[in-house]
Length: 162
Image (cartoon, rainbow, N blue to C red; front, side, top):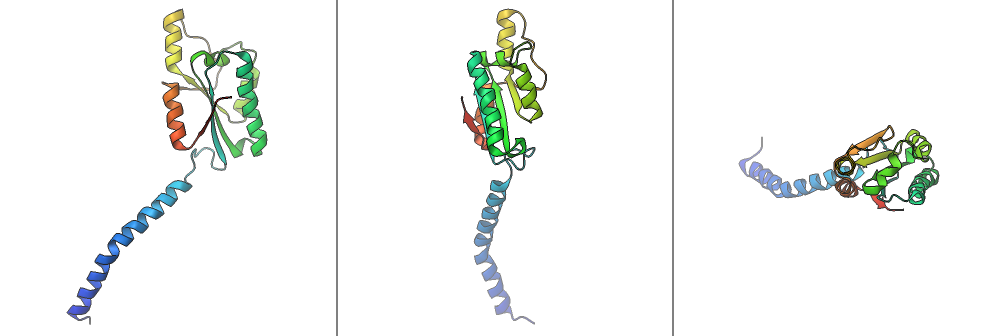
């Protein structure tokens, strides 16, 4: 049986180790957090990239799609890179039905590239022109494109504006 002094010594040691145990728990939880994927739908992606498109220039729009294709090739396939293309302002013209680049969008959707459109832009167009444009299928809608970019960069995405 333990003597009273031995019990008191054990309690004292446990009290002294408590801050160390808390620190160790924080370090381990931070390490687990750092190892969590940026996008759980793309657990093998080695890079997470958001391409900004806020330009109506067809050459710029084609360049954004080219960059997405080149990234998929560079990283060895669509599972190895997470790509989102965010269109806002004049950039949403890329997403309009009838755009000559629409078949390329469809092809990239099959490669799991996500196309995001800003609802604020659509609301503005509807207010100014009397109707929102008809857009291709497969888009993800967010309320504020720039805020979405800010959130994604905080999550670890790299912002590129081709």
